Length: 324
Image (cartoon, rainbow, N blue to C red; front, side):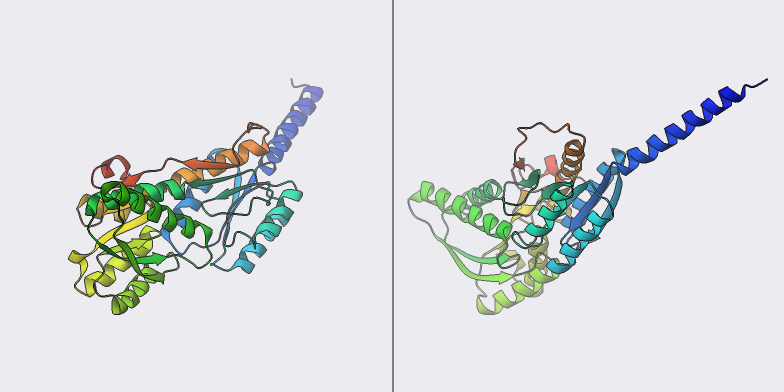
């Protein structure tokens, strides 16, 4: 025969357990704001962050800013209103997103910035990215060794005007290239004959390359600030019958398609910028910050491993099942 008191206590315990479960779920809501999903890198980064956050027991909401700063600001404001306490953001603009990030932090949200830059006056926990400068220098050094002092006519394909990450990447490559050439022969024979803007996308790289080829048909190196644009440029070179005359170099990303071409000897080198690693770490550290488990001396900028991925080491990084 059951005891009414025991039943009441059991019911209260169950209600308390359910209440605690709901509260625990409410205590961990992660918002992921990407300024664009227009290139595979960003989609992979979002997927990795979302997957890790869910593995850690959190609810996840995501938003695509569609390369529109006003929309991304609205996305962040909406997420904060919905009760997120972790914001993972790849900002469209290093200055324009500062007020939205600071408003989120003031509301108690722990903010982790990924991949792109954000003015340090913004109130974020940490910025997680590959070292664009170190990757760039490694790429430049590789290019100098590969071409052995040969005069270079380089077509540069950049992401977006005013983008800090793109600037760091191209300047890193130039520094590494010039320094390595100077060490080789006390002079530099690299000439950037033209710069195009590809918007970080495959289609943008194709169009930029088409325009550059009209003005500079004798280029022998394509340097892009990410793989997506270089892969697009490769299509334009193929259509123009010039693919076998041009060395393809990307400052960053390590896209699976680029790795496959590197393995086949059809693409020179790319910088290591793994979106799976960045997204996963962002979720881990953001959630640790909410839980009070992140060390007080955790770095404001956290760099992942730099590497120049070429035919010599591509097997170390290539993953056939990668989403990127």
